Length: 145
Ligand code: CMP
Image 1 (cartoon, helix red, strand yellow):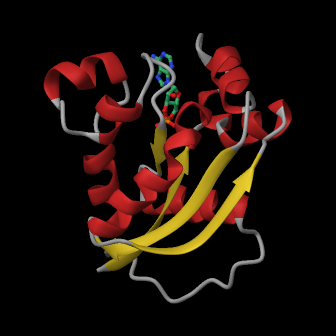
Image 2 (cartoon, rainbow, N blue to C red):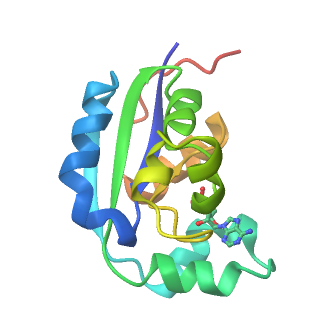
């Protein structure tokens, strides 16, 4: 199915945004929407509400509000799965050992500052797309069910 997912270029990788967008396009995605935003700590907490209470939550919020980010709605066949495959494991340090070609291995900084985000499921993609693009028309998109 042609799906949409949300990609985020995080503060540590924004200086490489052009290069990353190029890879996104060459990997068969269309970039449907794009927004550069500097989240407040409160907005970053809302975005990552599911991680509230975890040990790394305060530093995650500090990281994600430390500078501008770029939110992108991207689409292709099986976009959710394929984008997560392309960015690779969460931990950049481990990714460099096991998946040296993935985008986090290339653009990430450390175990927390991992350069890129991808929605992990269809409901997350819907929620995260609406978070950044609240006015976006909800197009008919396959649910995969
Ligand atoms: P992301 O895929 O955007 O989803 C949640 C983010 O929290 C993750 O990328 C990392 O930036 C961060 N994160 C997840 N797990 C850890 C962890 N164990 N230690 C530090 N940061 C983490």
